[in-house]
Image 1 (cartoon, one colour):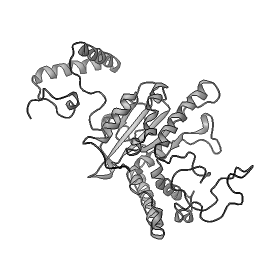
Image 2 (cartoon, rainbow, N blue to C red; image 1 turned 120 degrees about the vertical axis):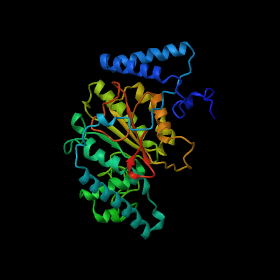
Image 3 (cartoon, helix red, strand yellow; image 1 turned 90 degrees about the vertical axis):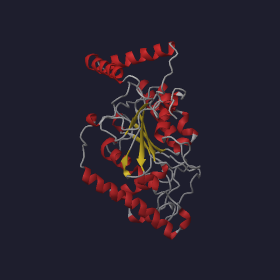
Image 4 (tube, one colour; image 1 turned 180 degrees about the vertical axis):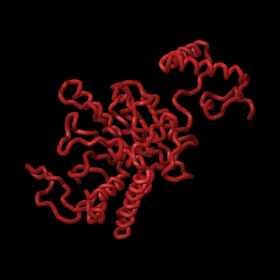
Length: 361
């Protein structure tokens, strides 16, 4: 195939036609660079918008604007120095990932019917650890509301093993609890049956760990239930909206608090994961960050299509009006985002380099 003139607009980013006049192209690019340097990015955005409008009037075919090149969205020169100790954090992440795997394997050796998830957290471990170490802001002890209440995090249900493993490393869970993974009712029975008249006693009185995040089964550990799949993203959207409502009405000061939702690309197939995307953009939920781990796992079948999962998801978020990022989580998440805009962070794992290297959009 040599004639690319009949290709649809979807081919613009995948197959680039031969440049008929490289010198003219270079002159246009140089002029654009000079304008950005002299008048700033806002002026550049305005001119690009005018050019797009003019091209539509002239019935010029436009390339898709819902996908960006398959690379980190933050240039290397714009990335600040990593604020932590990479060697120490790498060792801690490796320990947490190993303990999560060992917990699931040991539980299934004793009871093969228990099941469990290994690959989900193995691929998301770096996202979780960077979040715990550098992003999630906890409130003071005992403070769960107001501006001092800290961030709210909706964890991917199938990555709960990693949260348990990290809590064990921190001393918040015992080895006995890890030994009863997916057997949260094992051990001491409840003195008061759950749901009895006048009782607010949680159902969990055992010494094990629930399969997925669930505050009823583990009230002293989990804050939000996120399983079945899809519940985390939509709950996070409405949580962020409600916090904006409370602040707008002067009922509660929620300034500085963020709502985080972690999901997998398979979870984004669920209707609940996508149902609130336009609402988040329409309501200007800039207190919301959704992190999607594109590890090519879908529970209802193989990955469909022949394109990039992260670019397909980028199109969904872009069409709904979200800011999109890819690559490393960086300490300044305000880059490349308009005011009052929710943010989606998309990471895709390289199969050749393993879970520690990501090639994103």
